[in-house]
Every structure is written in structure tokens, then in C-alpha cells.
Image (spheres, rainbow, N blue to C red):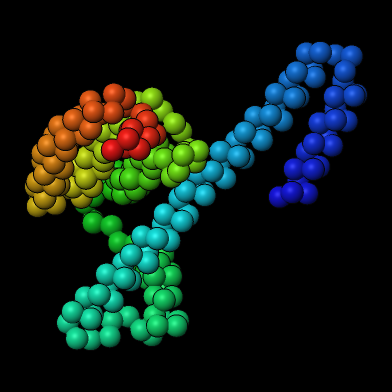
Length: 214
């Protein structure tokens, strides 16, 4: 990665010297290079948040299974890796190699889009959550409203999954889940609005900083 960036800088210097007599061409080339660097940096920032998040979720599941095993006086996952620590990776591999089964009368396109939509919406909410004082992917002034919007859109993934199966029972279950999600969002929204009023901002970083005086 470092060697690639050095080569890109050298290429920029060479192009700047060779096309210096043509300002328009020089501007276009430099703009493309800057956009390339910006896109790569943004992708790396996203990966720096998403990859640890997914790994932590995987190991929270094995922690849950271990604790349930202790409560029920059994060992829990202990075969894959040392003390079963590689069990989440084995579960992920098993999930990817399993056969994909579609209901015979389902709308396959919507059936595939529904879980992807729900998964993506569950991840993009982390874009505005501050990990520290300076580390945040997108420090929006309306970060709380952004979280409300992404969490509300997750309802569509549930509805799409139930409707695309072309069966009344999954659709009724999807409607029940959607109603439950909406009812929780209304009550949680009222609670979060109180926090925003006390902090005087919808910016999540400002809300965190406002707690220093407490």
C-alpha cells in the first residue's frame, strides 16, 4: 500500500511537469488523482469500522454460548481451535458454503435484496457514532436524525422479506415484526429527544462532549 502511494505521488509530480503548459489538462489529471486517493481513504475508514464490528459480534455470540453452557452445567463450544475460539469462523464458513434454498413461488430478486438491505442499514448507522474525540467517519450535525432514518428504513427489509416469500404466514410475521419495530422506535425517539434537548444538539459528538460537565 505504501509503495502504491509513493508511485502515485511520483506519477503526480511527473504529470504536473509534463502538462504544466496545459492548465486544463493538469487540473483534470490532478482532480482524478485526488478523487482516487479520497475514495481509497474512505474505503479504508469504512473497513476499519466494519471489520472489527463484525468480528466483535461474532465473538459476542461465542461468549453468549459459553455463558449459557456454564449456566446449564455444560462446556459449550470447545472443539474448534483453542477453547473453541475459532468457532465463529467455522460458523461463518459453514454459512457461506451451505446451499441457498428459495421458496418455489417467491419473488427471487426481492427475496435476495431484503436481507442485504437490512444488513447494510444495520451497518451504516455506525458512520455517525463517535469512537473517540477525533475518530468518527462522518460527524454530521444531524447525527441523531440520521440514526432515526436508518433504523426506520430497516422496517422495509422485514416487510420485503415477508412479502417476497409469497406466503401469507411469513407476511403476517413480517407485519408483526414491523409493527413491533415502529412501536419501539416511537418510545425510544421520545427518550432520545430529551437527551438532545439537554445537550442542545443533534450531533452525537456534541452529545458525548456535553457529558463531561456531569
